[in-house]
View 1: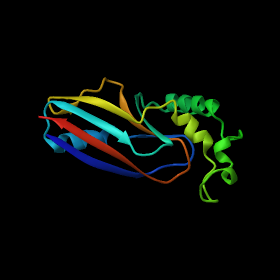
View 2 (view 1 turned 120 degrees about the horizontal axis):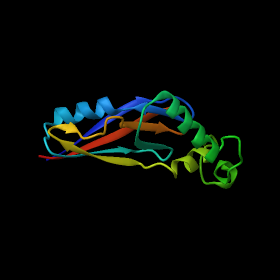
View 3 (view 1 turned 60 degrees about the horizontal axis):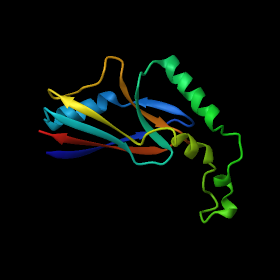
View 4 (view 1 turned 30 degrees about the vertical axis):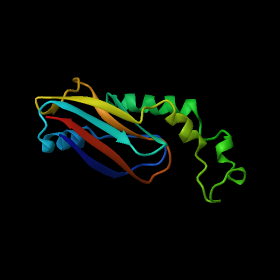
Length: 144
């Protein structure tokens, strides 16, 4: 059996983390799959999906780390919209695309006995790397 659900959300601006574990677990429970896997996939080039601890101070550390990798204040070729084939109001978000290079676009989580087989401190985190907007994740469940 394969089933796909969407999670829609509004994100905060800048680097931000949203814990989507409970929503993914709910989708798994509703699927009726006892054994299989859940793939959580972001459909956006300036976002990521990670499994990590959702502790507030760690999230602040991760935000600082990503900001140091590609600061918003630097100049990026991607931001020169006059040289690109794009609308003039295209966002200047080269920094977001570069941060996204470091993060996966999906995570696969085993389903055992009808539940996500996450470790004690593991959470499924959606990572926004750009400005606030509507975003969509896909959760695809495979199993029996």
